[in-house]
Length: 157
Image (cartoon, rainbow, N blue to C red; front, side, top):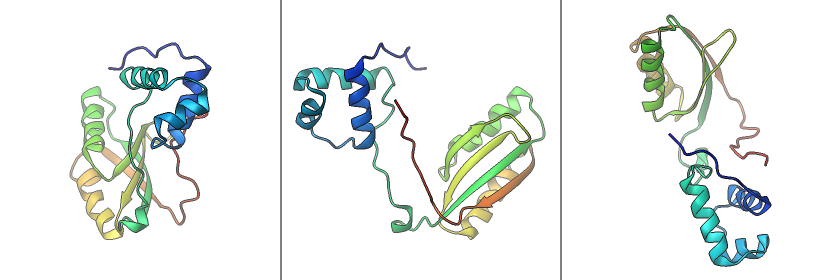
């Protein structure tokens, strides 16, 4: 469980905007852009990472350049909403490396998944593992993305 979010001022918010856009910016450049000293920037970033505000520093890969050419959005309806069964299916989705995002939602379906696979053959195999063999899936509906119009996890601060 993450700590409570720290109090953040305008400097923190500006730093977050900058590293969210490019976490490879040099400390010196960050310091210049927010008008703080290098040690102050380092201390603030360390605090923001420790508190969980900055969750990770990662590289974003171009899927088509690494052979992951198919993005699928899947609506999943479960058979039972008993807590233990919901926890089990959540865990199954969490452990699946092809599931990039998983949302437990309100409405006509229970989960919405964003899945990235090499091709439809890989997706078909995955459907057997996730939806048929795993249990507690009443139905699932697949939407194959024709184009990646926008992909971002950036937050407006």
